[in-house]
Image (cartoon, rainbow, N blue to C red):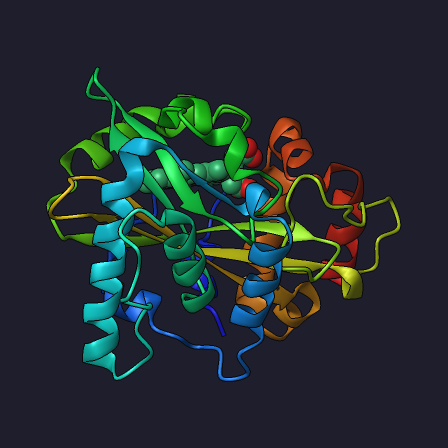
Length: 276
Ligand code: HEM
C-alpha cells in the first residue's frame, strides 16, 4: 500500500514539492513480476511511436547516458540490460529498447542556450492526461501552464530546485489524480470515461505518479522518471485517517484545480460516499 500519510497529509489542499532523497537504481528496477507493464509499453511503442516518443537533436547525449546508467544498474541488480549492439545513429531503436525494458516513463530536460531547462525528449507511454509531443521544447513554467495556480505557488521553487540539483543526486515525489478508468495509458488522444454527478466510489481509481528527478553526471541534463500506480478509491475507506485527510483535500481544492483534475462534477457525491 502507498504511504497515504505522505501522499495525503493533514490539511487543506495545496500544491507541494514533497521531495525526498531517492535511489535511482531502485526506482528504475523492474517491479512487475507479470511482465504486463513492459508488454503494454511494447504495444504502444510499436503501434504509434510518434505519440509516445520524442527526441530533439540535443537529447541524443541524454539517451546514450541513460542507457549506459540503465545497464550499470541492471548489472548491479542482476536484471536485463538494454541492448548494447546498436548502430550508433539508430536512436529510434535505442529509444524503443529503453522504452520496452524500463517500466517507468522518462523525460529529459536540458539547458537551452539561455540557460533555462527545457524538455528535449522522452518516452511517455502512460501519461496522465497529457502528451509528450505538446511539451517538447518547453521550459518548466510552460509545461506546468495548464495546472491552475501551480506556477504561482511553486514555479520559483521548482526552478531553484532543478537549477541546484547536484550531479548524480536523485529525489522522488508523488502527484495524484482521480480517474474513472484503470488504463495506464491516458494520452490526451484516447477516450477516457468522464466523471458525472452520480459516479460511484467503486468506479474511481487514485492515479499515483511516483516521480524521480536526477541530474545526469555527464550531460548535466535532468532525468525525470514516472511510474504509475492505480489504487481503487474505495480501498481508502479501510484506512480511516487517510480517508479523512483525502476528504479534506478534496473538499478544499479550488474549483479551478478540481476542474483541471476533471472531477469537479463528481466532487460532492464522492465526498458523500467517503463519509458513509
Ligand atoms: C519538483 C518538481 C516538480 C513539481 C513540484 C511538480 C508538480 C506538479 C504538479 C502538482 C502537477 C499537477 C498534477 C495534478 O495534481 O494532477 C504537475 C503536473 C505536470 N508536471 Fe510537474 N512537477 C515537477 C517537475 C516536473 C518535471 C521535471 C516535469 C517534466 C516535464 C513535469 C511535468 C509535468 C506535466 C507534463 C504535468 C501535467 C501538465 C498538464 O496537465 O498539461 N513536472 N506537476
